[in-house]
Length: 530
Ligand code: C2O
Image (spheres, rainbow, N blue to C red):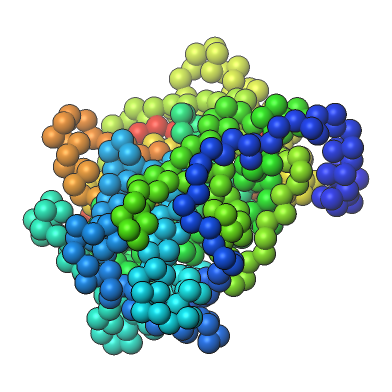
């Protein structure tokens, strides 16, 4: 496999496209059926709020102005602060919920875009020429983990402070809507950005919803952790958008999505896809074509007219017809004519087990040995045998592969019970050599950190409906961890049965340090996918 390394990606594309015969097939761009309501004049720039550039500084002032204007509008006006936050409230729970799903990135992209458009239109009523250039600032917590100075040096800035939720939104009696973090306070979560940037696939198809790999890791990792660390409205998924910092946090999430596409564009399902597939290995599974055709909705223009967008038209932020913005550090995405990368992990061997040991379930931090829970049917044993053999082979492949080419991955999905206080962050380790509470994220056993982003209302509502507690699923690519743990010592052959999984919950919000963090593992599943 040495030669593979010496080919660059363009050569590889050239070789394969030349051999293709279906270049004239209809492109997925033809799926677009939408009538555009806004066409931008130029690509506007979203700047880092910490940038010292004049245009960046100006946008912060304009943002403050726009927020103040929106806060002053009556709630009945769709352009008002509360009405805009209500959109998020509506799409964060129940059957409209776009969180923990493949719609998370495109829905929020459209939500921010139409919010930004309202800000701009409200500002432009004051007839200052520069207002037409306004674009949202983003808060790059990857390099500046402190709450930006614009939000207050010692006390919260009056315009950019969060607001008390309307009385009819309050469902928990002692709701803490004010931020828990201090002005200029520091974000301390396990951001794991390198791991997330290195994920090979946008989706992993697990169950009926495409989530996982990149989008799931970003959402349940840094995205949720930062919501919870800010606290107050931000940590409640039904109230989060009442806090102006929400928009800057999400602009950064959106920027990370663009960045990820810049490096390996075909890792995200491409608008250049061809429904029949230009080659056998780039034909999208139905769940992806469905995703590209979907419409995200719930938004308004400044006049209160409802607007929606098709996912296929939300992939390219530079496109003036549909979006027309870029990040100050961003480049246009260079999609290939015919995507060469199978952009999705589809499992070919899966093994799943319920964690039946009741006593083990309530440990504050728990470790399970996989072998203890795999039912010993002959079918399962066969799957295990195949899995072990394929994983051993995969170690070799993975090491040779280039980052933009998809290669087999070993995915771990876990189902845990939603905790009483969801403001916790959970670290996952494999084969922890000691008590996981003593391990750091630098340990070779470390896999990932995930957080919950919930609303207390959701919890009470469901508890009343049935006595069963709610569960939440999370998925991780554990290929590299497994390689690290086993390839280092190749005297010991790999067996999945010997793997142990540890989950270690940590409270994020310091306020409730008197409570004990507990997490219950309900089940785990391994998928070997490519
Ligand atoms: Cu819709 Cu950060 O959430």
